[in-house]
Image (cartoon, rainbow, N blue to C red; front, side):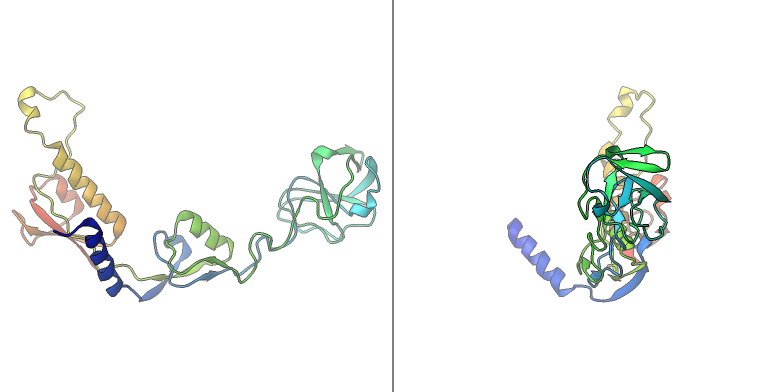
Length: 258
């Protein structure tokens, strides 16, 4: 008898010999669970421009020689907008994620500022680069963000979308599903009502549980499968998933249909 390690080694060797190399391109939104066929390189810098790490005021650090300096507010820059170049000696009201205007080299959080009529008092001494997320700080354009062979998760798809990949090159799906032997009558029973003692012994809940479990596992492996009866009462009859709840099926095979 083979040991577990020997059996696993044989399976791994067989899988290597039958490895899939054919590829296809699919929309990123439809690539969940697929395997990348090539490295994914970022098409953009992330973030795409210097932006504010918090709500506050963008300014030129040299314009605040001491804590308590009062600066006029020359503009307001919400996230998603691009402000005008900063006027010398002024501050710009800015919000998290908004692009830092040209001429500003620091952002002071609003909790360290005191708003006045058309102006703001800066209560700290800022330094250049304060609270600014630099262009490409997270991901540089051209960098590999997902490696070839990666199985695509929801997080991976989000990353792909963030770097501008609307379509992904993935390996073709397996050309087969898996063979599953299901025995006994497949039916879902409702146990919300009391069961008489004379009936309890005839209820095989284990078979029902296994049948439903195996069907769902096959569906997760390859969504594009058909079900054909191999043996039993409905031999060679194509059936649907719903038939498992109404027919007395003894054994079936799951076959992938490309």
